[in-house]
Every structure is written in structure tokens, then in C-alpha cells.
Length: 315
Image 1 (cartoon, rainbow, N blue to C red):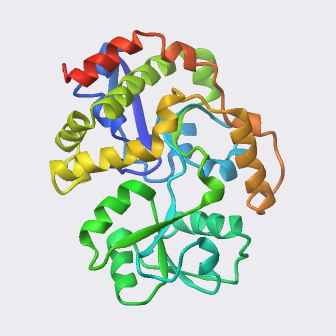
Image 2: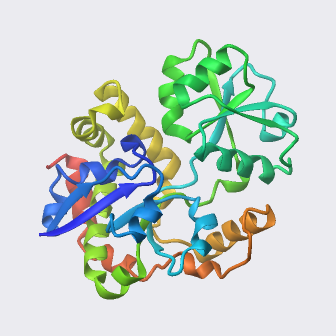
């Protein structure tokens, strides 16, 4: 068995259930992989380059980090779309990001500051025309919102909104970053050394994840049950885990339907937006960020048969 040490960009199983359910469904073993989940917090690219990970699940912040590395790793399979939204109460007069000009936005430092600034800058609102206040993660941010200490807070999209809605004293609404709705978020990432010298392992890992994606989208009931078994900390109940899977499926269907392939025009637009907004110290060739060269081999199995198996719940 080949060991694959893996960490997603954040330890949030409900956002990326396919990695977790591939284990009980036997997909890693089928690909001769001994899967080890590592807690690297948010430093996944650094852990990858340091050899503490074999493959990472890397998010959008890589656009800023990539040029700081001598041999930047590459995304080779996208698994979800841009997550981040602002959350506020449904009866709030705030209807768009533009309405937060002059407002107070709650963040969970340090990660959310980049996403908040990205959303605000995308709407043409420069730093200095709003205030970012560290309030902690979702539940703490919700308390701050209920106390009137902030106008909105940054949260990770559809999945987190399901949990927050159950806890809120009043109905909530999400304010999306419309500029980034087509953008990619997390994907499988490997070093150039692996992609050149151990390509087969990267493909086999991607294939196990691909089969996990099939089960996630084609049978959210079973996916939610398995997620709760594998990562009970991911939800308060199995019913909530299923709701998380369904919410994520709706938000990220394009990544599944496109089989993890990254459209160069979208990557270029993402790069250009980061450059236009001043998030990049120096320009660089965006093509260093990703490759689609493994996608066909990853999906080189009987996809229709696996879809049918997932729909029938034949584990």
C-alpha cells in the first residue's frame, strides 16, 4: 500500500465529504492507498513543500502564495467552488456587499481577513471604508451579530449557513460575492516532483476522491450517514450531516459536472482579479497554478456503473 498523507485547507469535513467517505466505501484501498488525514491547519502548502504531506487540498489563498515558492505545486483536480459569503439577518437593510461600505464586518482571523478584503475590493470598496473586527468563528460571530456589534460576518457559504440558521434567533441571509461565483476554491494539489515522478499515485488518489464525489452527489443520504460516522464532530446529528451534504452539492455542482477540470479562462480571470485588486506583489504566469493533464486518467473507470451503484446505495 502507498501512504498518502493529506490535509484539506481547513479541518472541515462537512465541506469536503468525499475525502472522508472514500475511506469506508473502500475507494482508497481499491487504489492501493493507505490514507492518512493530517491536521495541518491552514498551512497546507507549506506542509506539502516540507514533505509532511503528499497531497494537499489547497484553497483560493494559493494565488497570493504561489509566487513565493521556488517550485510552486499545482492544482490538478478541482473539487469545489468559491465558498465565502457575508451573513446577516434576513430583515437587515443590507442587500449587497456594496451596502457594507462604512459597515463593521466580523472575521475569524487571520484567514477571513483576506476573504473579506477580496469581497469588498471586488465591489469597489477599498480598505479604510469598512472595519474588520475579529469575533471568532461562526457561532461567536453570530453572537456578535445578535448583540449588534457587527453588521455582517464572513462565513463559508452554503454549508455553514445551514448550521447557523438552526442556531440563529432570527432568519439569516447570505450576501454572495457575485464577482467570484464562478471561481474555483479547493482542489487536489501536488508538488512538481510528484506530478513528474509519481504521477500514478496522484492519479489513483484523484480516482478515489472522484468516486467519493460520485457518492456525495448521487446519494447524499448515504454520504451524510457515512460522513457522520467517520467525522461525528462535523455535525450535531446525522440529519444535519445529510443537510450539509445537500447544501454543498447545490453550491458546488459545477465542479462535479466538470469532473474536476479547471477552465483556463476562469483561472486567468481569478488571477487577473487578484492582480487588479492589488493582492499580488508582482505579476506572474498564472499557468504555473494548475494542470488538467491528469483528469482523463483519474476518470478512466466505469463512471456510469459507479453512479448507478451510488444511486442504489450498493456499498
